[in-house]
Length: 416
Image (cartoon, rainbow, N blue to C red; front, side, top):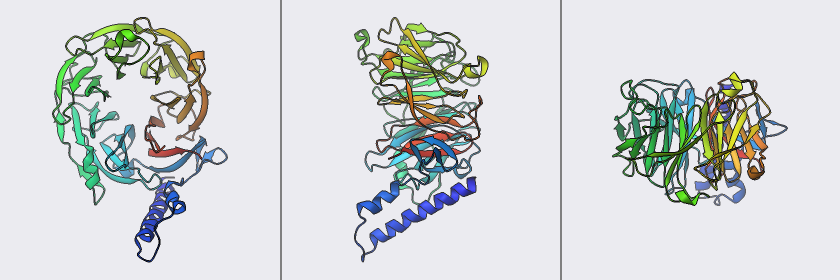
């Protein structure tokens, strides 16, 4: 299957190169719109429920790159970066051994630009986020700390793939499960942290000032709330006016959701907590655009309790008094992982069931509706930790990137 994919990608690259050669020939006219559109044609359109071998509904497969092409065994988390100077788009893919950088500006001919190797040893867990044109990378690899990489260096790659080095290696903590960044405030929040094998905050968030990206400064950490597996941090402008412009952290803390005010890094305070029935492992969550509702995934309930894919929705109209709103159940027993919201679509990375696109425009009436999907794991939708790890839907072009554990980077787009 992988050799066929690589061959398809080579065909696409050759097509793109051919177009560029024709464009620069003095005896030809500049590319017209029809030719330019070829660079956005899907390698495998979603037709009759399939894009090549991948089940789909409403989303085309533009291209993909395997882990082996990124010098790795498996992929894990991912994020994206848009260079506002050049307009180019890049996928940042965590792997077992590195962070890989891929130019996806021409989505059917992605270019693997190179990799930043792990700071210590390999690990199945690596996480990357972006602030001020820099990538910030953590891992559960022992003593890994935080790597900082200036993404503008990707503009100057002339002979890919390159082996990059970090611009800064911050070592005031050791391993970490995840990193969260509030781009408004310029703070990174490191969760699930240890230092030389010992927890320095009980796994609760550590606060790092990254306003100068290459000179991070630790400013404190939570002492309440316990281990945080993942979090979202926002400069709040939601319906609870008591907290307008405060920096609010929503932690997914294994057995509950913790709402905290972290504006004062020396004195963070827990506002409230909430749990839910049949809690097993509160994994990750995301605010709706208006910050009224918070959508959470429990990573272990499908396996240990036996329900279909379950998403839990809370009403956060009053941060001091959060309320359970409703459960949404998918059509399979696949395990849900990470979910993100763009406009009124909740993009849910759901392991063996791929990415599910859920319309949340009627969430106030306790309604969510699946309106599309792309399944990177065609074998089955079993309750297993295979397939889609993460989805990043925030490119303005409409490109969406998926990181799949076994198969690497997928680039998809909504079908015309």
